[in-house]
Image 1 (cartoon, rainbow, N blue to C red):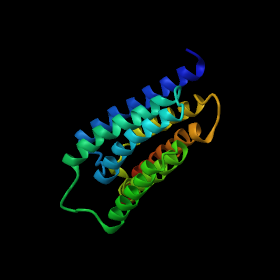
Image 2 (cartoon, rainbow, N blue to C red):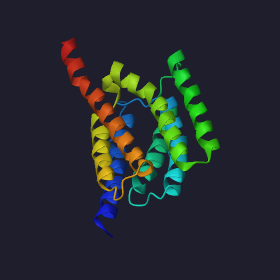
Image 3 (cartoon, one colour):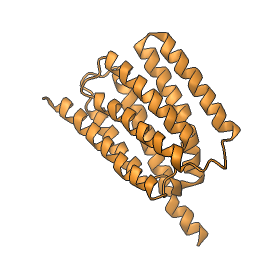
Length: 196
């Protein structure tokens, strides 16, 4: 096993370990996963795993495996822990619709690079309800989980042996997403201080 393979495997282990405090935080009712985001992420995670493998990802495949399994768990928990009395707003429904349109384009394209690109677009659209929630209610997200996931994404980037768009884009996107969620959830301390 070469260095790139070790870094890729370590990345998968670290990102997978970020799910443990996230699930704990959900069960402790400190984190509220947004169902639209997590259900779409679970579905797209499975498809991106397939296309990422088809593109030739091997050393970096573990982040895609975790990017499927973790959202499946969070999606299941979101169905129980979401406050359904509030429903969803127009923005969240729009994210859902545009994500589904991107998914259809992605599946129909049959081009793995184009498919992965549309998957990332759909993933980013699906992330918007959670990003918005993290901005408005930073206390509803787990800083620790997103921070650990960002570290795992860095290792996945380091595991890229031969740089190409198809291999690099997913780890780079996930690093940007995980880092943004970490920074937004860090704001909870500032929000608490402002209320005092």
